[in-house]
Length: 286
Image (cartoon, rainbow, N blue to C red; front, side):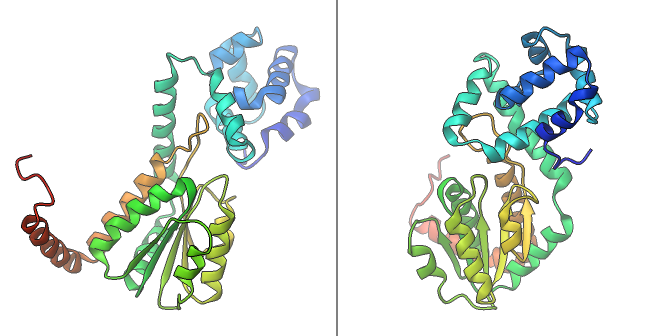
């Protein structure tokens, strides 16, 4: 089964081959795919008056290894098609008591999937490219801004010239206007992708800068405008983007960069510790 296959299209192609019970499931999914994407097999079966095992067999009949794989395909559609208000309405289908478990498990599954899918060769190439860059620009707008801030904050402990861009408007282009082939720009964006981030990455690439993307998958437009790209799952339950896996990936990058630039980082941290102690930045009693 190709994970990029649109399950709705697959349902249409398979409609003539389905049993009566399977047709009931298919009809419900076609009409309510946004709700079905986050239902358990048991809950979906109950809503259409079939057994949980029938739902699992339905997933098998479509070519999926099991219900979780079919559910993942539905979530991919939701992830790319829904507006924020539609995502919010979607979460109403989740039982309030189960909601914490559903959200936390979604984050956990995103991290697990990212561990399995991250391109190790690209990861190593990103570490090397950033280590060689004269200036590193870190760009993250809207919901990606906190990720950019976290990444930029810790990069400054390793490298001398790190420039963080999280603001809107012309500020982005003013900041990267002097980017050169000796510099690197890291663009971070997830569905629904920031057009300004994409424009800025295209501009940086046109000037010869090394452009690195951090996004959600091969279908992301960031792959088209990046020299190197790393993917992290962001499947969500509601209007809030799940940024657990992207943050974990960025954390891994920071650790790898610290190891790659150990001497520089060690000296910088010693200098910072002196400043922190002198000006009592942290509470020494805790």
